[in-house]
Image (cartoon, rainbow, N blue to C red):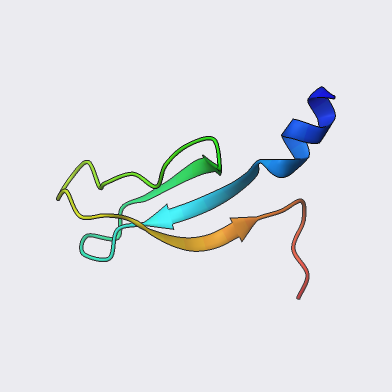
Length: 54
């Protein structure tokens, strides 16, 4: 059962549209944060998965 919950949560990289500050958060466990530097709501930049495909 614990593995099922872990699979539903995915890591995403979020970025501030103003100052470009980035953070990695877990979705849906965490809400998309506000930037600690300028206070703007951060945007999803990339869904992080194991490995990259080019």
